[in-house]
Image 1 (cartoon, rainbow, N blue to C red):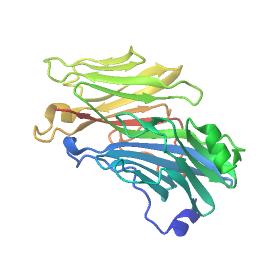
Image 2: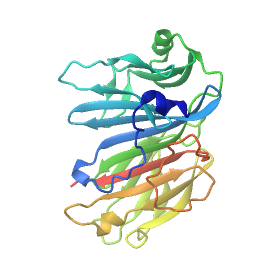
Image 3: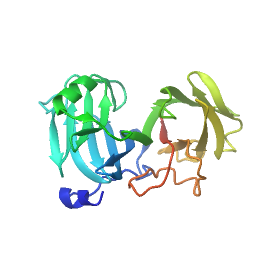
Length: 282
């Protein structure tokens, strides 16, 4: 939406930068989610970024590249874990006072973060839905509501890398595990969904870049991978592998610009894309 940059007066949030210049040991624990919605009759994208560091947790909410608010949670200081902010008649409400966190930056429960526009609940995240509607006094969205279309995440491990993903709007959330032991003479790349093998790539030492297709919830999911740095990276800075899981039927013209996720409502992509940066722990 064109009026947001002029209202905020802030630079847009950068969500498509590749972390290739970041060393594996200092890679940021980060999750970026992109939601497509409609505000005032226009299609726009809401970006929610969760980060975790030694300084604590942080969540940033933006619309079409313009930041609406940033909430920081520092465990040893008094921080505002509950509140709201209004910009251009669009409000962000949050309650993270009882949020439960795991190893990742996203809360596991006990929270809500929501975006309200024109007294309608445009986006609602978290399990405290009743509390969110009571606090905002907002009505449910008159449109189809916000739909997640892209997610970018950093994952860490020695040979297994885990996350959760939902590949269709009406499907369930699945446990997604990537397994690859690069220490053996003939490594194999295995992708498991809910504990079942959905894809296997043999001799991945030679097939360090490629693509394949698996089926989840009766939906075809294209899988693209680049694990070159796992085998041929500099020992002092091994780098990261990149994986993309996408349900979009449109072909990928440049496979290895996988870091790019939608940042503008002008994007015509459909379906869902999950990009994982997999960092190997020493």
